[in-house]
Length: 542
Image (cartoon, rainbow, N blue to C red; front, top):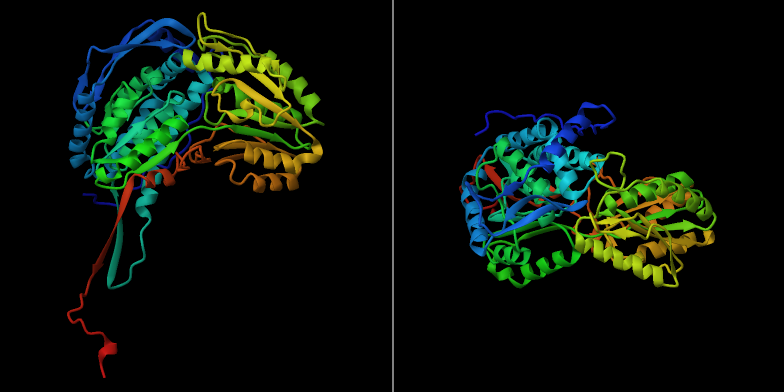
């Protein structure tokens, strides 16, 4: 038991390295990239103390060179998922009782391992597996993940410090118990940091986890596993399984000990999981926590007073960084007629200057989309836009999957504010622009609010403070992360807790106390020092 009120190191955001020419970090990551590119790894499942290889494998390749095999991973059968659940429940007996400062130490050590000896490896793995440029890999796999780990520890202590009022004869306490059962973490391909944080945040609060990474992210997930193991996470606390998502999910949700799901991914899948939980609610020992961040159809709105170059940078960075494969990526924009000629001119200049290719070449701004399914989907929307009378492709529109899954950064201009690519999440380097009449600013704000089922992120650009206030109010429910004169991506842990509402998820704000609170079940303890010995109250007397 603790013998002191311990203070954890103050959380600070990890500085982003520059990777400038001739910098030591550039040399280190390129060396790691080349080494990992020329190796072939074999990734087992991690269940309890075992590393399980089933022999039923799938290959891993780089999206920007899909013929190049970087490794294999082993697929689970139902029995392996059941074993992972059993391991999580067994590990819970000791992990849930571990003093909080020791759990904190493990994850703080993980942060320092990533900041130091693992930095080049986890960045290189993310570049290879997810085709991220070095800058996108650095802000994700290194900095954001480090920030999650550091700030979550600080947030945990703040939660524990939140205690009720007591007086001289009664001591009131609240203890923040881990959930009774195990947590299921389902993570996406696009952010290595999210892949690590979803199981780690639940584990930090004393829970044990069954984790299913995305099939398209196993290569960098292996580095996460290596870090967690070296940091000292005990066997069975985070169990890792790969394979058929439906089978794994159905097996997990059939367990009476299922206590919650931590999810990032598609809206449809999340709703299906919610539905399954609902139909099986009588199975569970507790009411499961359902925490999810899903899709987005994120907007950029320019007021006539906006700075043109700022608007264009918000569009190009917001829409095309990491090939638009962010839940927060800008995918629809509303530009006033008065600014459109200048915005269009600058857009053409900027987009035409972007280079596309392998992330190993640091001069490339655009690389490949994640897999053939995504490529084919995006190509179909681009082809349709070429045919439709109410749409015009003014930039990009070409694609090629002969070597890698490359889609040019594409700008569609539509005369129909409800055109399909203004409403549908594409998850690629495609943005659709609607040009509105300057006098219809108010109507346009209403249009922005009502066009999409999502409410994740959005940005407005304005030099008019009254217009800014108006937009902030009108779009109150249109985005969980709202940006003024900035792109709608790039939330920083400890500064902008991330999450959206409507069809974008439960808005439990990853990187905040709000999220960690979902993984505990508070218990109130009242201790009375001088206990009454007679049931009679004074009012009963004569």
